[in-house]
Image (cartoon, rainbow over all chains, first blue to last red; front, side):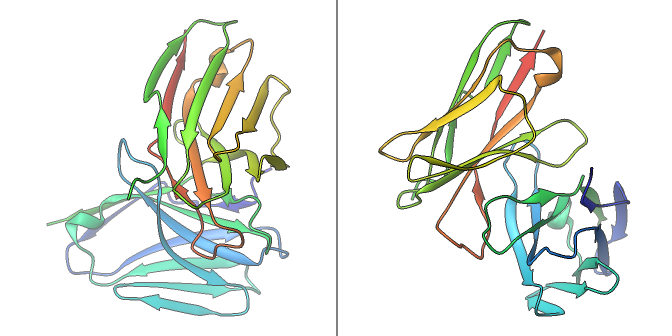
Length: 112
Length: 113
């Protein structure tokens, strides 16, 4: 029972353009959402998060948008850089942070 | 500062064998979580330990067990290995209620043949 879904396994974007990665969830009780980035042979690295009481959080080139009514969140990367090429996972948790539910990931390729 | 360290990095085992994976959290982090990542999927929660007590368990069979030691390091044990246990096993540490999520180690790649 996949509670967090990333329906696009891959995305290719030109350097300097916007990358938009999408994530859907089914459980309206989730309080917290995160994005992780993963390079090959490394563990996932925290990127950005958002609480369910907000609808937007921005950190430099990265912005996460949360649409609670649609149970949808997205990660915008502007401008995209070749170093952003990685697998991106979205994750959700309850407020106790005891466990995170991860999506299956989207592989982003930023072309120079 | 050392991050989350996991050992070994790679491991090959035969079906039916037992395996022990080890994890040292970031200094000061008292919570350790274990995740299994099968190829093509996202990490799936196995266990969380805090102050040596189990705080959460995912939907895994009893062949999977873990423990946390007084120095907050942790072991994940898997008995009677199956081919389907082949995966990347990730350990993560965190402080209580940490809004930044976990800090993950690089993982142990387990191959069961």
